[in-house]
Image (cartoon, rainbow, N blue to C red; front, side):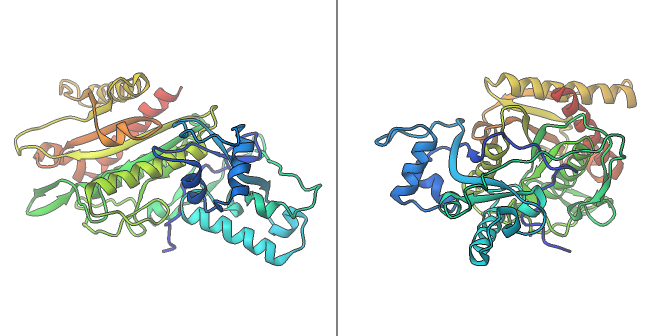
Length: 397
């Protein structure tokens, strides 16, 4: 199967681009001009630092810390790719120069700093020093893709969903303009919570990942742009009851998942924040959905819990909407069952240290036999994904 290390689940049509020809990003905690330039593989020379200050209207002697959440322009220009070659796109017949631009775009895409390669999103990123030699008439431009009215939405394939589920057909555009960062808990060297059923071990990361993939596909069917923060190149959506454990998951951008807990969480949050900085145009809606499975005593049965960051009004509203949606579904499909899910404020790392509106979901107790039914029965895993998608649609509209 083709590697998906830098795979971005995306809209069937490229997303609309911001109206500024400079790439804009939001810094993360501890960022300064030097570290931001280095992250985007730009020189930290006086020329580049001064250019950064100039395009961001900073004084030449400004040494103040960068403001978290604020958009800053990088000395990287955006040019429309014509679908043919870099040289024809830039009207500049210099093979060596075009190759440098190509290599830069590939490098930042591999690093997860650019959502898609220019051959997919039709946008070239050209560092300022590379753009200086371009013809004067070839100014940075942005293009907006055009959909043909009344034309049926095309189907496309995404290998990340697995061979049996890879075909995706867009149903509607109810989530157009929404960006979701889906974070399946644990992965790589960390299996998360472990339960046992019929003598078989059940690992949290495998079930959280499967339901997260199912949710991703549903969101995309409604026009959302979706990023999978944890990715597995050979485990797509699986229909069997017992999901085999492996440890080859990677973070978005083909990044290794650290063994130690704090570095693991730091890296995960940094990826979310970097992607958020690239996608938050001010006119779209950005959401982080973290999916885990809880571990409690064998006898403790729980329904789905929804956590939000303490004091975050938007996060609470999102969690409450998901809670109400799933509760209504249980009332319809299992009348009289009752529903014990909860909405709770929590000071969890992924809630506290990420920028999008976020909800952290615990799907049940992996050690309880009744909660295990929610995980091992394939139709139940799909139902959970469907219901969460419905709740996210309600929250976005």
